[in-house]
Structure formats: C-alpha cells, structure tokens
Length: 145
Image 1 (cartoon, rainbow, N blue to C red):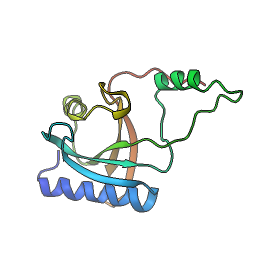
Image 2: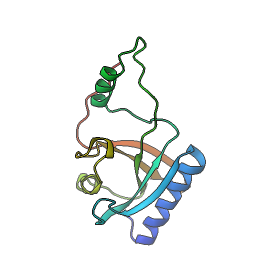
Image 3: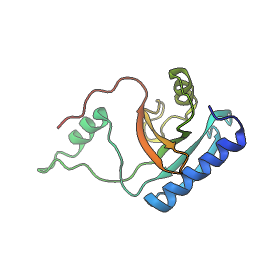
C-alpha cells in the first residue's frame, strides 16, 4: 500500500478532483474516520453524489421492479451516495485489505442496519489517469436482462 499518509491523502484529493471536474459529482467529501463511531478508517474514503445512479445491485433491482410495476418497468434514475476507495496502480492489495475497508464502512442509510454491498475502486496511474471499477463485497449473481 502507499507508504505515507500524506501520499494517501494526496491520492484521495486527486480522485476527488477528478470526480468533481470530469464526472460532475457533488457533495464530495474525504472521510478518514467513520461517520458512525469516529473510528479511524484503514484508508481515506470519498463519499459523493454522482449525477445519476451508477449501478443497481441485482437484489435491489428485483425489489425496485416489484415496487414500480409500470408498463415499461422503468426504475427511477435517482442518484444515490457512492463510496470511492482511492488507490494507486503500484499498490499491492490483498483480499484481507479490501475486507478491512468493507468492514470499516458505515451501513447504508436507506437500508440500515446492513452492510455496504459495493464501492467504486478508483485506481490512479502515474500519468494521473483514473480508472473506476466496481468492487463487490462477496459474490454477486449476474444482472437480469
């Protein structure tokens, strides 16, 4: 992982800037401590609101289709707060390290008590390119088409 807390904080600031300027996210903040119990997080996390919903977990998709049984079966595009884990391409991560991040995350407000099912992994390259991947906590069944 990154060597100093200053490097990790700079990495988080760089990803936050990318989300704000390139992807139009709002309500962005870098968290170093849990908003639930103020315990330190293993890594800084970014929370923010994207301009539209990024992803719908298959379990949530089924529940929303039941709640909105309209003729089109359309699910509202209301954005939801997303969690982002800033990383650098040169870092070596283990499953244990990712699990510690998921363990430290506060439960989602809309379904509390519970556990965050996924986060957005932001991987920064040396040339400042940022690539985003969904990282799930556990195995996820395929989406329904």
